[in-house]
Amino acid sequence: MQPLLSIRGLVKRYGGLLVTDHVDLDILPGEIHAVIGPNGAGKTTLISQIMGEIPSDQGNISLSGRSINGLSMARRVRAGIGRSYQVTSVIQQFTVLENVILAVQGCQGHGFHFWTPAVETPALTKRADELIDLMGLSAWRAALAASLSYGQQRQLEIAMALAANPKVLLLDEPMAGMGHGDTGSDMMVGLLQRLKDRYAILLIEHDMDAVFSLADRISVLFYGKIICCGDVDAIRQSPEVREAYLGDEEVPA
Image 1: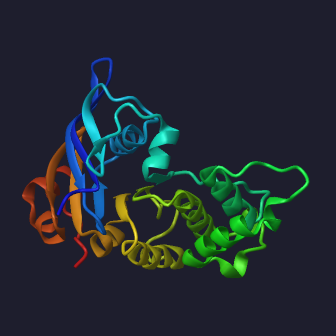
Image 2: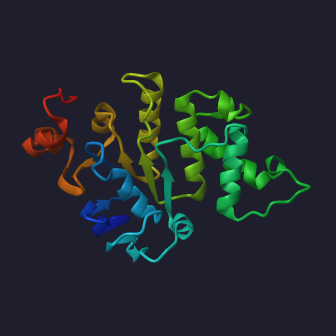
Image 3: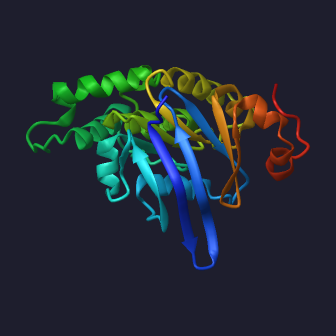
């Protein structure tokens, strides 16, 4: 199977600090590929390089077989890459519908008409409602984002990231801020399991219960290097991964 997203030899340096060290990574269609590693391993930098937010010093990134190295962040989004962030970036004073409509409007290139509210534009509201329903937020369609739980705000942010119809979705710690066994965390796991039928997903996550229940493959990033890549069983059983990251903690079955 040909990868949707292929990364070869990706490097980012800050002076003498090598943050990503010749990273090779492939994301396959319909796959959730998790990247795990300790804080400071370079995970968020890697996602930012893929998105074009941080320029790479070396290496190549290809989407559907085409290099996207020279593309701006906006053009990478249009080419088929979506992203959520560690810290939620929704507009708190907007409703759920207004937040998603704004994302749809930006991605579809609709103009801003002063005399026609976006929420009254059928083409925008139809697509926005599809995404809101997909993320399980239909009951909160008219609610202000500020009134949502933290987990629901994470769901809303993913709905906004999906507005561009991405081929590959980059999720940076979608369970961050949710406790172990938290209802929001369980709901997010269920939602991501449904999304993998539609999108290839690169998942950065520290919640190992979530990682082991969701991931088809896992890559371990340690001081900028991929030290191991394999399925869940291979990562569980790797002495190198235990030494570098998992330690002596009990690994979820």
